[in-house]
Image (cartoon, rainbow, N blue to C red; front, side):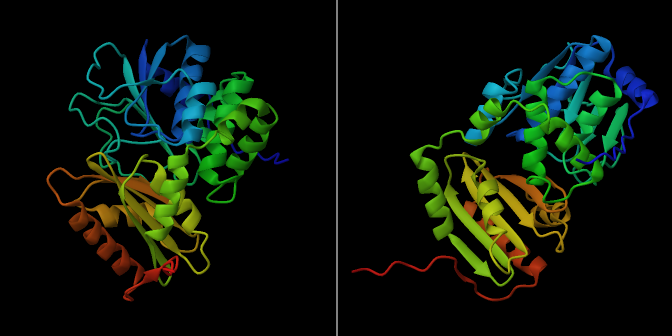
Length: 348
């Protein structure tokens, strides 16, 4: 058990957050196509606001929750989140809070009326100006935003019930791959403190959610579409059944022997979705994804994980994919033509 708990949140910081939230209600938003860390940390913020100061909030996400585990999380752990196609009405709220994302990333509402007062995130900072933001907490060294919200709850003396503990634990576990990447003492402390109060039945319902047949067919197609360029691996898919598929493929391919960076991209509706994974000793994934999508789309990430989206519009998907592939191979210093990951089946 990790006993060292370097929690930087104190009464002064909590008061600044309370002031930024106003009287309520607070609109809480995470990134488009939210993942477990975003869902858990947003839910935790709503609990903090309510239990500490009696401030009501509303949790809204945009995009699609496609991964079956993430859909199960919404059902069993964080059903308070509501889906909207776009967020248009901001007047009813005393403040807007962004969790697990930040202004400038482009992976949330881009309305001109969208002016966050609160930002809590652990991704690489892209803020060029604080603007009207009253409270900003961006700590790129943290393994998960869930850890940060755990610290707020702990500092405020809020009891974390089993459902919230399970949500935060799963958010922390997925973003750090079970503490195996980009973690701090704070992540480790939160992980084991939360584990002690996890509802293992609900956790199993999430982690072992059943997968449809289309998932396995898509995975087979992805592996057959993968090419290896020395220390770089690229998977280019066509239309996907889920926008989360690139993340799952990249998570797997970064484990290929000799690989230093794995990039997967595929089309979902009129958007090209990308996921990038790197090893801890190679390029900072958050910086690399911005380099790949400069002038093309939106991106965000941290040390070994990153993702992005490119609105295709009238652009030919093949042209965009080719440009991103070119930039990726140049950044990785790879000039070989590459070879298929899997050998082609011989006809009988």
